[in-house]
Image (cartoon, rainbow, N blue to C red; front, side, top):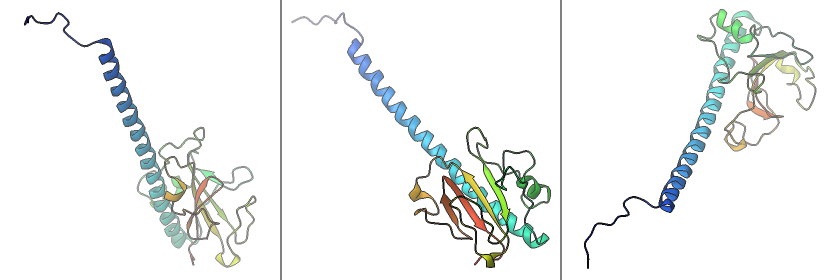
Length: 184
């Protein structure tokens, strides 16, 4: 029996391929997990922003007896956070929010942005979105488009039921907050 050192020092090609495959699999799982957590983080920021904006709009209404004016864009009476001159700028300039609030992506091309519009009592918004009841008076819709990481069960309105004025809801791929000062 000879105790000579083996001439084959190192790893075989098969061993190297197995190790590289395992490292590749683990890194792809880590990247997927990181991507999902970033999406959920951006969605959480969007709901936090909507909450801040809703409160700022209501305080603005208390102080001025009207909602921040919304520019009419096309036929839908909404304005968008990706526009330079929008409702958020009004709230910022008048001191109702302390910093410029924008969607984490805020791009019309990516389809991710905030929107805002004001409507008169009983005004028909078209499509399948019914207006708030007459007794509400003027009301606003504040929303966000295309949430990334939330599933339907993780949203504030998990059953995607028809909206109730004064509550979050999700209709037609958008997440809304509908409200006014006289919330019931």
